[in-house]
Image 1 (cartoon, rainbow over the protein chains, first blue to last red):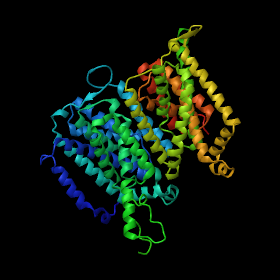
Image 2 (image 1 turned 90 degrees about the vertical axis):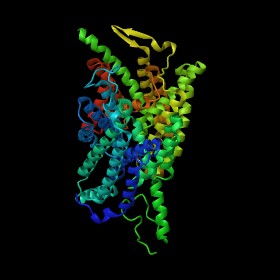
Image 3 (image 1 turned 180 degrees about the vertical axis):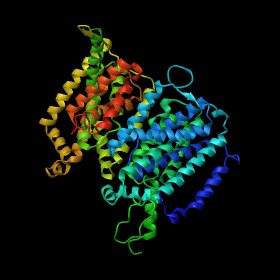
Image 4 (image 1 turned 90 degrees about the horizontal axis):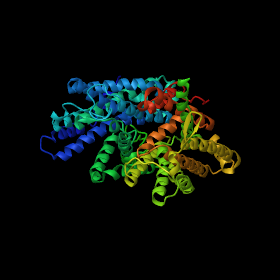
Length: 341
Length: 288
């Protein structure tokens, strides 16, 4: 996978500064509350990035992300029960999620567009029922099936899970950056813009989409495992919950689907909403649902998209022609200066 | 002989249950057939009518079957406005927008139920809810038989409606070729709104009978959606006869799965069959 080195460089400095600042947060004694919300932000951002990769760039509206999260988490929990160290559980979580993606891609990749979306919607439900009845290790805690504690999770300080999440999150950001500027990203952009013309110019549409699906599953599994280290307990109904899909869809759509910075903006807003609505936990998701619907209708290109568009208008001041929509310009300059300024 | 009698029970129950499943799936199938939209909020909209019937039963003592007189028009209006003000706009934006909006509606409804009706498991339990009658050795609950009968009536009624009335014909026309329908002077946006509204009336009927048959919680919507989607997938998207047969297959898969692998596995077996069919024949067993 070749990448354009030159285009990888821009904007790295702010990212580096932000990373260092965020990494220092637990040391300089920021309130515990903040650490928790920032942890959530990292998790959501990484998940949203992966969903953006699939939905935004590949056109695969995957509703089975909770399946990967749950599988990552369960792999980790089961590994700790067998007695393996935590870091192996994390890696195994990613690998098992990727393998699972390979398996379900056999039926699911025969579907396209909207059929793909609903085909994948079944998967978390299937897994939820499966894990409710399946208990490979450990005795019956209570009832049948139910959850597992992640053994040894309580001994890990909050600081370390925070850093772990930060590393994964920055990793996912850099990964998206690299992908979008590599052959894979260019191929995906071509597929998104016109599938048949991309296929006729020698792009293997199926292969690119499959690789993206598996890669996204692996990272999502890793994030799920990291999240359940912090939670310390996993059970099927919350692990394979459609709520996950809601959160990462919301983050991506609010921020701007098909935009590199979209998930970051969106995840920030989602976490802020969590913070604002923490006291009204029942209404919280309802309000988020309303926001999702309205953003979709009013500004389908999201906040980052709207900003880009406004910026492009101000910078180039087009005369006569319509400015190019921000939603389409994924990684290039905000707007192609095809008109005279 | 003993085995035969033993297995006859799950088979009959599966077929009757299949009637209910195809009833749930009819609305989804109609919306798909006309607008090419998979309405992810269908399960939760079905549940809305169940909860309405539940409220009328507990608050005013109205029989669930009678409450359909109120439920169906209410759902009709709700469906009409959802399509008119949300989905019709969304269709203009892009292909995936309506799907995401439907997903948003589903989350909104789910949490709304949780706030208003609490997360407890409920059921519609009129006096006749537990009655059953027997044919030979078989013991059949009255509600299951009712599900099947109503499914047949509704399907025939829908078929006649689509064939004989102006609205029905306009819906068929708009689903076959939107552009041509518009040239013939059909206001397709309005027709879409009617189609969605009719789908919601079907959802209302399905919701009430579902409440009579199964207990429900605010989270049940997703499983109903998956059942409905499974039925539609098995039968081929957009075909009514296929929907009916798909319902029977899913019902049988569930009861026979429960019979052979234990009750814990029954829905798992049903979903697994949907998933396998999806992989082998994405256009459905009876799809073209």
